[in-house]
Image (tube, rainbow, N blue to C red):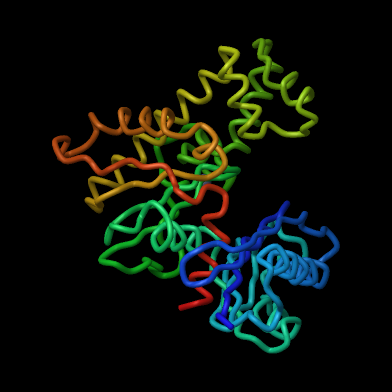
Length: 319
Ligand SMILES: [Zn+2]
């Protein structure tokens, strides 16, 4: 029987699991992240993997290894700390995620890494980054995450390499989720886009964004809500997305001038949802700021979409 690996993308609201053989995704499953604490989260991860195995028509005994990507800081033993959105993993004291899951999976090997790094790994080994040895992955979602492949290796730095969301695009500009001013994430991250839309609305500007949100049964401005408002030519949505494009153009041209990578792969909830037209606009905004404009990086969408993280975690497990 062929051995399979499972990959999990653990987030504050959802758990995405996939099961892979050497090349393909054979099965997947998605579940809501329990809000009760670490034990419930780990139990739900195990259930999601079981469901993914079932959907792959495979049994638990086929499972050779498990990988998991999570927000927060990861220690060498696979303990997770400082993950503000994941119930039970918020504190500065690490929770032993790798050991806890390994025990629940009957002793098989479990590897843990940062969620953005595993998403970059997924796109590199199974997605849009396959032909490159140097690229930057940017995930424009609730926040803006990033990861680097340089000289054919994932760049860790001192532990926080690739955090392009917290590079400055406008000194003294809009407040970022991290508390500082003028970062890329303050203009392109969904959470800050929503905060800005609410502020503009309370200042008297008219927008359909919040009506679309209600009509869709949502309680936040999802990428889908923003996309729909753009389709309806909502001026506030257009201006917010224009600013996101501008900010990404500034940050990515700076990154390119520093690193001279072959490609910049743009994903995340908003990047995936708005897709190639959005990414083309970002490339256009970056172009005049490039030191070597005649040789720009390729600006590409992800190939794995919202499975980048889970597939990357499975690749990590198999490594
Ligand atoms: Zn920031």
